[in-house]
Length: 283
DNA sequence: AGAACTTGTCCGATCACGGA
DNA sequence: TCCGTGATCGGACAAGTTCT
Image 1 (cartoon, rainbow, N blue to C red):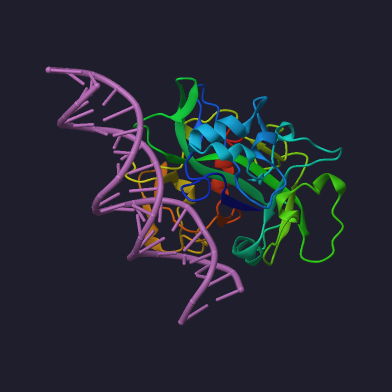
Image 2: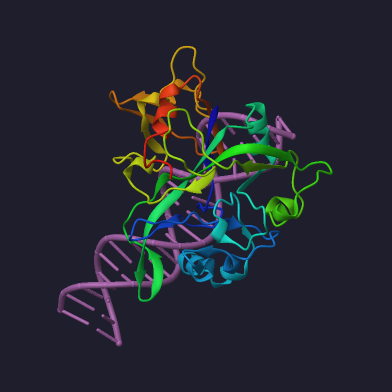
């Protein structure tokens, strides 16, 4: 089983701002803009409301609500109108998919999504980011792979998946869809969570950026992530100088600015599987 | 060798807010 | 209402890892 730390959501270039954490601890990883996607921001629901006004207010760009949204990964049934048989999906293509294929990512492997977040608040009837509050990377969702569908050739795609943005427009090579399973299965995990979902409320354990970090890419991870003899380090982070042991519980990682998918073989890192099974981390 | 691509940094412009 | 200060924002550019 492999863990893939996957960067998904708004960032300073795609979207142009962090993703909001609301005053009650709930949060939203905003789908990035995609002119070719048939899905509008105004058609996506969060907490029973359209994403249109929220994304327009946070970005300061009114046109956003009418723009196409790259709803990907698509994890929550209530986020969009569904057809019978729908299951959570993740699309990958180009260099990111090549990276996953090179690492043999497939059935049973677990995507854990992270993004750049920043606290948001209501101000004069509009949403804005809390002035002075710093942005940070945090884990927000997961998808465990049940099936991988290559989209390059003439593959039969079920009707319930036809809306997915990766089936529209011109896509580069290695275009693939990852389909979630029914239930999450992690060694040592007791709870019965679905095969894909988002964390209930963003809290300290989900945070990747260290509490005393200078920049968002200064991560604090459980010590179980620390590379060692005979263990392949997290992809994109092979250089030893990126890693530093902090104490028995934590290590520090200078996270790569580039790259979307960081792959780790959990057979070599059983402690990371234990961390994933921690109650409240996922779910 | 070049492309892809996000973060960090710098710098100047702009905005919000409090005090006078 | 004006002004100064601090925060924020946008453009430009460099850095580093992997894929093509």
